[in-house]
Image (cartoon, rainbow, N blue to C red; front, side, top):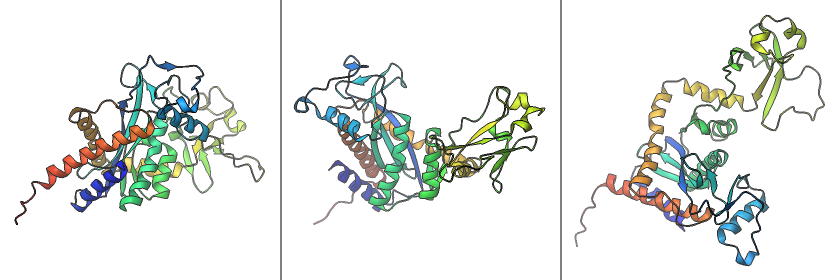
Length: 335
């Protein structure tokens, strides 16, 4: 019901031309759960019989049984709201949920909202959920999506580029840069035609130096493919101490989504990205309004579904205020 109310308000904003649909921004904000840190455990828990379990506990146990993305390891589990996440990101550790916003940057209208536990992986996973839902409910698909580095995960960028044809105005999540004086991945040249890297000494790094069985793809669990040099090339190389001082050969892990990462890197280097950086901050303004003006800093209810209801109601209030302020006073009805 709350989702239908929210969608109706969004449709009203669209009909009033407050939504341009060209650029969306995405981000998440922590909201304290209605859970006390004294009522928590880091050991196996006996949740009792199903008849005595609360709705929040039933939702949590259902997620465990279904092996869904919501089933994730936790250092400390709340006994009253186990789906909430123990986090110290905002100071002293407490239990939190994340409210994820997808806004249209033209007038800061919240296009979609989704609750999630406060973990980076689950926050990023809402990108797919909200983009698909907005396209289905409102027929909107932005030309570009703005977000911070957290949304620059390789799989997320590939979803935007190849599945939705959306420009990712998002910094790439990249940990390949080395700060110990040795050569980084950027010092190696990628050759698309030969499917290999070339080191500064023009020696190849290949994914396969011998024939593998047809069913061996070589893709790791982290969705990367390893490219290695030959030991004979590295043995007497003058750059060995700067390249691979502790190993016989150099290895580079290349993401299977590297082409999408390259698209994002090229956008970051373009003049249009500067504008996106400014517009991306508008979603943070929405969170500031939520916490300061609407005084929404803590949940009143427990469980993921209840958190989602509260987040939807807050987003409804935000959009209604924006609609009222931008539309202006209504004309009096005569007769």
